[in-house]
Length: 224
Length: 135
Image (cartoon, rainbow over all chains, first blue to last red; front, side, top):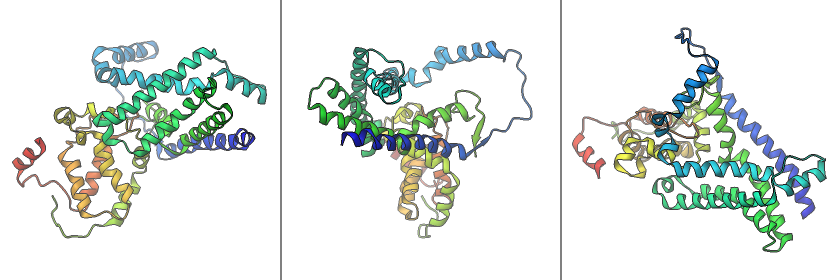
């Protein structure tokens, strides 16, 4: 069992994950076209290089602009969401044990954080996930749009962290929990390409590449 | 509020119209149901009723049409019209942290309803409707 989930199953999940990312990207890319350049442009002398950046930062960081964002209206949840997303990417990538396994297999490793740091990050992540769950159950607006699917995906995202935490501290039978940990991690990777977790690609594509009132910058493509 | 209450629903046309907006299918499949959009809707801020939330309106109008495909009934469209006409003024101020164009989806749901003869009759009992909305 252990050999299977560390061998072929891992490859399957990696391939599905990569294909899923490419598929998500292609799906969005295929329904966008090159943005048409306007034939008449208003010239702005102070709109180049550093001056442009300064203007942008002034606008983005002014108290009025901040008020109109999520950071202004719901600062606590926005911060929670930020920490949640940083931890979900950074913890597994920079975990010492993962990097050792990577080194043993391919003689290649990433920078790794200390074990106590990643342990704290895991706990912080789980706390964020728990708060998200509470928010989903008790806040009427979020409850109104939540289905069983949303709860399930939160579980899919949190499961590798719960099982990883249990395995690291050897709180339950290690052999079993590490197998569940690997399976849940593989499941999460597979889910990225096929479910709502695809917002991993969608967010950056829409916000950075599509020029509309919803993008951070000009953008080079538009919806077809 | 429909003009010809007994006319059949043209499911083929609805399907064709849904196919024109592939991006909206992607939008609906990726909505993280985070509920952040609520605060951007001034109707929600006034009534504090989750049914006024932009994502609720989009999921329960266009989202339902995508789900039902060829099995859309007139009753469904009538219920939807209360959401897309009665609970939205198309001000396009809804804000989604993922960059989803929510108002575009509500607008397209309105267009589909209109092709089937389901639309808001502003000339019939406007005061009654306003009172109903305020409850």
